[in-house]
Amino acid sequence: MLLPNHSRVLLGSSIAFLSLGTLVGYTPQARAIDITIDYTYDNKGFFTDINRQALLNRAASYFENNINDSLPALKPAPGETFTIEFMNPSDTTGANISLSDRTIAQDEILIFVGSDELGVNGSGNPILGLGEKSASSRTFFSNSDFDNAYTTRKAEASLWGGSISFDIDSGANSTDWYFGSDAGSIGTTQADFLSTAIHEIAHVMGFGTSENWDNLVLGENFTGNTSSTIFGSDVPLEPAPDLGHWLDGTESNVKGVLDPQETAMDPSIADGERKLLTDLDYAGLQDIGWEVDSSVYSSSVPFEFSPSLGIFFVAGMFGTRKIWSTCKSKK
Ligand SMILES: [Zn+2]
Image (cartoon, rainbow, N blue to C red; front, top):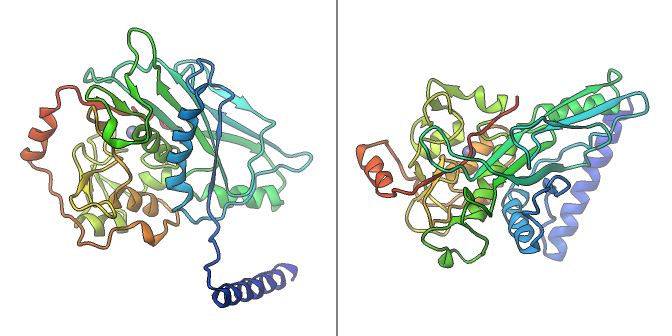
């Protein structure tokens, strides 16, 4: 009996708030996710330079500013336990890290970051980053606040967040990173850190790494409604066993940009290139359950892409294309 009554009170207050907002001429800020970056396991000092932290925060802001979900806190009561488990971002081939003393705040998505030597993929292309949506375990009382919050969070494409490792920045097999914000200054042999960070955060959010994603994969295509509408058909994915990225070379519109751009969530980036989230990337996030703000989409007619030899030819022109992420997903 208490709950419905409580809901009515809340509804009443938010209507009052909206009216007040209209009267004084501003729109109340919608609730949104809040990405926390945790540097505890940055054992190799990749983020000692606060300029790099600022760029990572900028990458996170593309999600924080445009995803309107409200997420309950994950706080076990006495007698309940909550253990988060994630890839060590500075030792990606070592044991996972487990923490039992970390609670997750309301609206928080927690991401541990670090760097490691990530090597090359099966095609010999250097890997720039690894982004994981990570696991957890718990004991709980049925219908407790923690149980209810966990169930609500579990329906999202990412329960609490995850872990990202970026390729090391020094030594024989390191990446020549660009840590600037100005896209026009990326060196012709450099890999753009901001683009890579955006890509990996999307994986932590469940893009290509969650059950919500898998449920929309049919054969080697993604069948989400918003994505298919924007693309003009089901969207071809990188062939199995990947199935977690748009097919390499897939393009889509970006708000405020005239020509279609290569998507952020295909598996590769060229030296000297910057890639931000396109309509199709946001649509993928929306299809796996996030409340993506409609203002992110460009208003122009969706670009219709069909895979062709032409695209592969263009891709082949970049002899040094670097491959992002092998997506070691934990489900
Ligand atoms: Zn990836």
